[in-house]
Length: 299
Image (cartoon, rainbow, N blue to C red; front, side, top):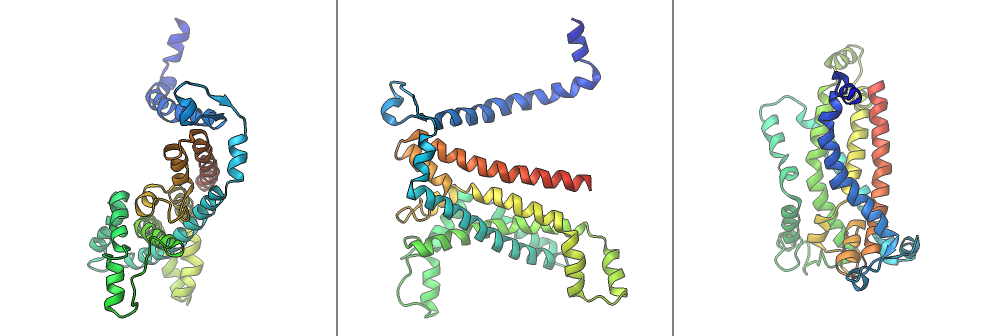
């Protein structure tokens, strides 16, 4: 009884408020992750799933994946897709943030409208861009032919070289508002006195940008890039709707290949192994983000 009363002291009451969230994360996040990890060390397919024969195979699934050409291609595709999207999202988002940070009449309404791509469900956006890049009825091919820039329709989504370009364009369109709004928030935290003092000292606007704006925005830039990496690296629905990993597995990402192994080829253990590799990469990047965030709070 004394132990119970001691636990319910005022300084421990916060643990009780955190308990529901902890139980929720434990049941709906912790258990699936642990179960998926165990599954990756077994040999579970549609054949032995019914009779419950789950053979322990150790690291065999991971070893076979390292020898799988589609897995290697999926991993490279995920990295290329993520880096390409980050570069264009950040550059365009940064430019728009700097532009709309200036005070003019329609700055706020237009900036609000530019948030629409971020608020639209990704599946809807994927369907829109799938229609834009369609071969026969696509808006892009119609526009290019009307401008006499091409003579024959380009098969954007069924050609390996152009399918990845189409995916990058769609994801960049989605991610620009996210970059813009975070960088805009960072710009508002820079004291205007710094620019005024620099102007008095004869510093040009270009010099102020590189010596004041960029250094002051460094924490924001780091957060934007790392969060952008996490959101982009785990892309699934956009790729699944637009290309389905095709043509001939050339646009598969780790997430879509994991889905294919699990629910199309019914190799559940291999699919879970791919998902775990994806999780490990995101955990490494996430821990790096937490380290930067804690360091920034200490500073």
